[in-house]
Amino acid sequence: MPPDVTIAAAETPATMPAADVILLPGRAAYLPATQTLLVADLHLGKAATFRRAGIPVPEGSAQRDLSRLERLVTDTAARRLVVLGDLFHAQSGCTPAVLDEFSASRSRIPGTEVILVVGNHDRSLGRIPSALGIDSCLRTLDEPPFHFVHEPATPLVEPDREAFTVAGHLHPTLALRSPSGDRIADRCFVAEGNLLVLPAFGSFTGGHRVEPVAGMRLWIARDDGVVDVTRFAELASRSVR
Image (tube, rainbow, N blue to C red):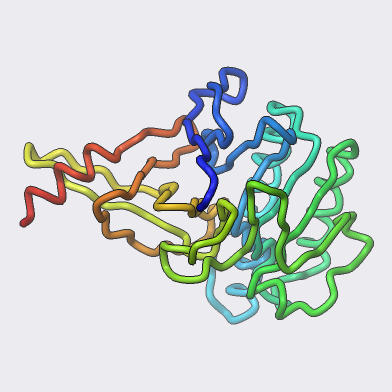
């Protein structure tokens, strides 16, 4: 049987509740037992990829995302940072400027180990340059009771295993309307069974809309907070039946 893993949301990194997995403002999660910060799907260089293709998009998204990540590492005093895949978007977007921004950011958190669980976009780059300061690049990471991977085995359910899976890749979003007409739409954390999927950390990323089902837990993921909307989703689902 999968382990019983507790999940809770924190108002701020400084006010964490007691839980195995803590969901943080800013689209990240924290594991207190190992002082590990988890993020997924930064897609650094995506804007540069678009600009190279002649699509005019604003600059600066990578630098802003890296600054947010540094603050989370500092605020949580994380011993480790585990990126659950798609740190970079594409080889064409890994410009000298993007790589320099990452290297500079890495140098500002020297006491934190950085582990990349390689995602499908990362694989398109081939070998990750050692000069970037990433300590380990792995296909998966197993640390009981957790199994860390980029892509979950199926959209929202992992097969029975003696582990609790934490993944990225799906870029989950949520759009709900309650019976009273209130609307919520944003990125979200999704937990179902023995699987937790993190929202995309990168600001310049798309999203995949989640359709709530019975037994699913949902939290809206914002820069200024994490909101449990599981009950809201249940009410919204009933209103459209």
